[in-house]
Image (cartoon, rainbow, N blue to C red):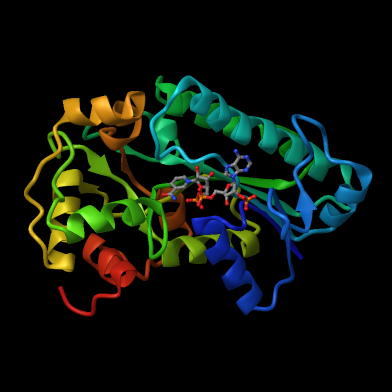
Length: 299
Ligand SMILES: NC(=O)c1ccc[n+]([C@@H]2O[C@H](COP(=O)([O-])OP(=O)(O)OC[C@H]3O[C@@H](n4cnc5c(N)ncnc54)[C@H](OP(=O)(O)O)[C@@H]3O)[C@@H](O)[C@H]2O)c1
């Protein structure tokens, strides 16, 4: 049995579908009426009844978190932090309380951990950044500590930008690009570390099954691209011009701190630990990933 949070989300729904397709029983923790277990209100801990579902799980796959792809108001920033740090902490404490504890605790994280680092290659041993997202990510990963202390195999999955149908960044970009209104963001020189949704799901299943991997894992392809290359490729795959750049000042006006913290941030990430484990990507290039996501057979 696998416990999944954020199960209704873009990534969670694909992970749950893949788990069920291979015969795993999935128990969800969430906010909606369809969740098997509800998050406790406010900052309360899980009660005994809720805890029983965690006992003996093969893995907890924790994906819940308030979206960061919007303007960061102060209230939104508080919820971005709370939904990750508080929820990860109480889920990890709950998993640590039950007997037997789940074997593995896989927690979402992001390449935002590294901050904005220009052309520098970043692997799992690279230092963290100093901006808001780096700070959140550090606290988010740190909140898994009770699970590690209780002997669980904890993996912090530092996701790159996930490219797939029906959600994530492509859901936001598809309409403007389809209308011919797409273009690079700012200088277009910033690096985008990305992974196809299909490969991400394969990585999550591998991390559930592979008892030799723990700690931080970069879940991104081995071929990050500059924003200008991403933009040109997306235009080509959609057969639309993508020549209307969005200046940095306009992004800052629209999205505030999120512009520099995410849209203009540069992360050139190497999936060193996945490569060491021999993981082979189904979509190794940005063309492959965008064609697969947008169901375009040609380019
Ligand atoms: N998509 C990406 O490109 C990407 C990149 C890096 C990291 N990540 C991380 O991966 C995780 C999953 O991403 P996603 O793209 O699947 O996100 P998503 O589609 O926005 O789904 C996130 C899920 O988190 C739960 N959630 C949202 N706001 C919440 C809140 N305030 N309190 C408690 N739960 C909340 C919801 O679960 P329920 O409503 O079902 O309970 C929702 O289904 C997130 O933590 C995200 O930061 C994603």
